[in-house]
Image (cartoon, rainbow, N blue to C red; front, side, top):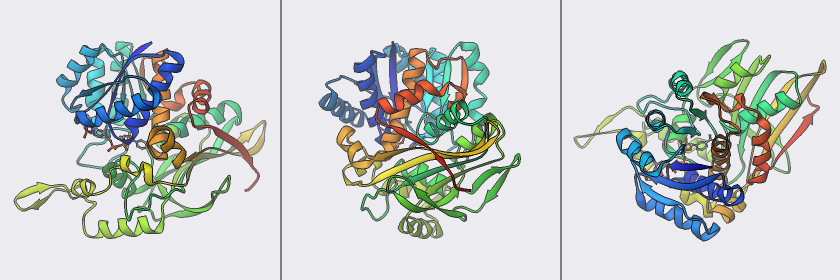
Length: 402
Ligand code: NDP
């Protein structure tokens, strides 16, 4: 039983709030739930959504998570013991500091990034391991879909299907459409930082760098989604998975993009609007990407507009009982069904459900272990059971291609 504080009232925050309320009603794992961000009205709107859909009361609160004393005061007032951080990656370290100061467990969905440089790495958060261990607190990093479910999929395959893995390809397909000229399915600033960064993959013990979106492959997705073009990107879960998967020789991450999205991105990038370097505008310093993000649709507003499905999974090739085997383990999620259930599209839904499950497993003690951990470092079974039970059913198929 836990007092839970959710931080971040965006598209993902809405789904986390709905799903935590559902878990509280089904299991009693959360006693009190509070949702806080800088804009109280956003929190109030989400709390009303939860009340209308689930008849459950979540308390709205205002907090600037960049202000550690303010955040600590709220945590103490609420007597929160678990914090689920679905604000922006810039807040991760401040929230971890507040958790240490106030004795709370910590869960997030995206690694810390310094605002001035798009860098995707766990070093800053892994550096907190001793402090969390000494405090007897658990920090669970990357409990979204990718990272998150993709890490747990890999751990499940290693537990149940393969003795060792040689090749991992994480493949993220959004086969849905929102009908907007250009919009991102989650935080525009974070999404564009990620997509415009250099690609990177792991091969034979070292990282190989590629130009942004310069490599692609066609992949035939199951259950009628069909053939789609996927682009190689760097994604943060690769960093921990290559350390924890026995035998891994190559690990890559792929994502589908429409030609239209890529054309817009190319034009915006070529005129400097995706840059994070400050420029002077009418006597004031602005960051072009922040300005662009402020003009783009709020991801939470895409819910009623988005149709189609997502398919995200891990293709893993390795050895079982001395024989070569390849598996594809995946979830398919329907945007319109997500909207009907929570008022959010599938990208927020596929992130919010695992953020709730991670919070539930930490709060219940099933995944409590003092220190800082990535998802594949825990037993995957309780997580996989909850995935299906809370709206993200998954399938695992053996592939017989080369
Ligand atoms: P949004 O931009 O929609 O929401 C982010 C929210 O954070 C805003 O509502 C904002 O509210 C709040 N926020 C920002 N700064 C602060 C602050 N200083 N203090 C308190 N609250 C703050 O993003 P999403 O909901 O789409 O994404 C949320 C997180 O989920 C991001 O970190 C993203 O990277 C991650 N993500 C992870 C995925 C995964 O699979 N692992 C996939 C998709 C997203 P306000 O302005 O009121 O403060």
